Length: 165
Image (cartoon, helix red, strand yellow):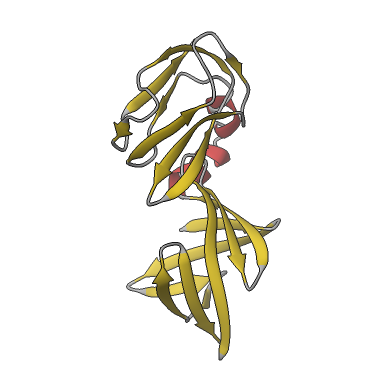
């Protein structure tokens, strides 16, 4: 199960044996790639143009433009929901220990330096992946202890980028 919060509305998503359900109701659609980050959707005989405008894989927050309207989508997987249920989600993000690359890409711009104090939500760096600039934000508070990569470096998913005190 996956939970999606779209513009302050919550939906439960499930995919069992290829059949998608939203809030326990069958959901069928036709989704086609037009180009990178652009899609065409047909749902209930209506046509929609969709574009992935911004993607923050670390926090699972995405901005989609559908027929000209921006929608913010916050996804939570089973682990996120379990941690939230146990009351651990806010405690886990209170202090930042390190930052690992959420996806393979190129370090385009560093927004912080060693010794900088960061708060949850501050942009730490810009990572270019799939020709898209992604603002990588702090998941918690901390002070930059070390930076393990430089502007222009390629990184792999899970590679250590920064350490925090």
